[in-house]
Length: 358
Image (cartoon, rainbow, N blue to C red; front, side):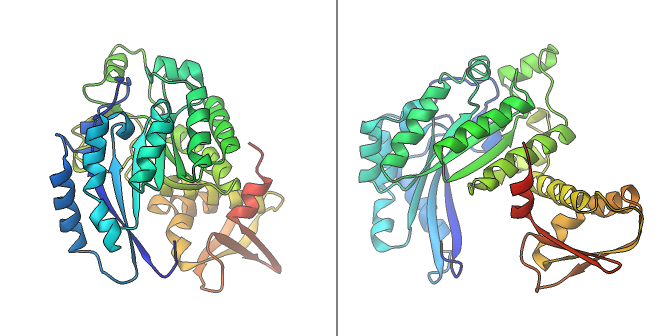
């Protein structure tokens, strides 16, 4: 995508449509805040509504079908939804179509259909590459299905996304790490990381109340997601989301029974990485009278951390007398420059990822 153009997404929710299994963690209507079926007319109305608010110049517009398992929907319904988008593709008003689906719902017939309707991006709900975790979660597919789906999609020129969940029943940090390492071998283009939440009206809720399932703590979630983000970014795979979109129902606490929900999960994870970077850069130093941390203005919030917790942690845990954080446009994005005494140390997130051993 051109840096000079802004990216806009028109979201269409097809919650639970096409899903052949009831995964123990899933209640799509609660998660997305959407319900009911969507047809071609609704798609056209939604497109017209959004296009009125999107500038016609310097914009890349994407139509995204979220939720459910798009390619498991009956073919006539898939075509009805996709057909509604075609006039806007032809006009140049919409550039991309994105769908989400299951790894076991990809075959040559599906691929030919998607290509004929100019779908460019396919995201797969992988969740885990551990077959035991998948079975316990009632996913209905296995890791080989993921390998087959990603391979086929890549061979036919699709942009491929993988969605991973952390904290599933019988999952561990090492299993999550192994999942990402196996996915990296398949060379997806993008990824999402979703910590498991206990949502109302799911089997996971029953397990939670029977004390047969314990969700991850927020602290443990950040620690796992931090490692997964490093692995993905180290392999040049863009992580486009960490954590669920904070819908109104979720923010009001109506639908989440338990689990590590945070409206700024990505910032928590990225801030934790910056904290680790600073600790690494100062690991051989003793007490420091004054430390200045210089960062790009767009990174200042991530460096400070939520409620300035990074600032407070660095000052109290690293024997720093005076701590100053300075913003400078001369510093590259995702870089840190430390100044203390006569010393100057600089490190980028990419540098840190490359020396990280996970």
